[in-house]
Image (cartoon, rainbow, N blue to C red; front, side):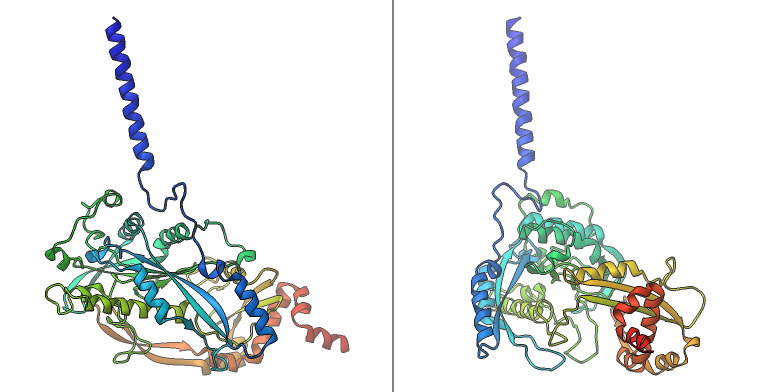
Length: 482
């Protein structure tokens, strides 16, 4: 009897010990976007290291006109996703060497003013931070894209002319997963937007992506990405390397826009997917303003420069790193710190935005909800308030006018009508020429410059009579004089 109680007690103890091991193993299992205790806090080099020197530089610039251009630090974070031997082609890029190359080759950037055509009085001292993302985060992004891919017919490959299946990814759907990676890397919470935090330092990030297309093939249901997230990835043979394109093409569309490999998020990061596409659009036989298959570097061309066999030398790899650095510098010049429209900024305290709709029909009112082309004034006002500074007052009024009731406006619209031929890439991957009619905004602005103010004043008077005296002081003054 005593032996039976002892054996049952040992059995219970062994069962308890086994359950404890299972729970401990499940709690310690690595997860994507997980911050373990002791997770290092991100160090903003351009914000924290040079804060005191910026103050002294500003004081010296204000007391000496010779300090032009004024040096302004600009931090650019480059996140390499899938370049740590875990992405497509198991390709690796040394983040420290790339950061050193960017630091030596692209030290400064001086934007220009489009209004004057002259460089600004500031010059950015660019501080690059290049670091790789982890394997769990890479697999989590691949899983999100695989679940979002939608068949879109067939497309032709650029090099071989074969027709392969085409899939499209809605970038707005996978953007929250990239935002989760952004918040995880820079230790930022997912709090809602506040105008008070509009001017606070927020890191800029460029996500360079190299996905494994075989692993994220939407037609292959046998691959369990959850297990690959924590396991060791297998090495690729020469035959596996030749099949890394997966015999399909995928590309992004942001809110139904044009097909692309590059998209700008609603936050402070841009995504450059080197495994997507290639996408081609723009004018034929021109380099500037068009995108071709050679615009973005492709790892396939690095691994197979001649189309047969793998490259063994280091020259091809160094060429790819140079192309990647040039791509990053171009992103900084045109996205992170682009040229500005106006030389001075209007720091107004009250901002009036009238939305004037000119209609040539009476079928429905475009300002009312429920139609395909309805204008959501409340949503526009919400987005505008995100862009203004703290303390600025924003008033948005909207209204529609019939063109047949305003002869001068109808003439202005008629003069501003333009037509041009546009070459677009269809689903078959070939160019198709379309003629589109559009309104030239500059011509329309010149034609209805005075009429627009009258219409805006009428909208304000209808929306709130008190606003008319606040934004149109000249009318109140004339009425008082009369």
